[in-house]
Image (cartoon, helix red, strand yellow):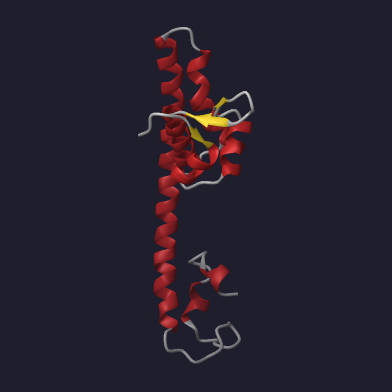
Length: 154
């Protein structure tokens, strides 16, 4: 990837993030760059890879606490066996959480699909889009069945 250290602005540009974001992760203890005598942050290839992993997890809804745990658990272990057990337990727990989120998102996707079908029934309607403006609207009849319609409608 590169043979020398990168400065914070170069890393931010490379990973399409902000300098402030990188500093935040440093403040949270997730990243510890090298520093020159003058205080300039210098990032190795390994730093960039670690930051890329952090950004990926954050983009997918992981909390800083979970990322911190995943990133530091090995440091608390005395043997590879101990590390394997602890890291595996965290990963298994997160896989369960991901499966729950996937199921929840699948349900939400289904609700949006049904809502979209209902909303498209209003195509070509010239009435005011409200319960009073269109009292015979099919959406009125579905408000108790399709939760998201309550946000769209009244």
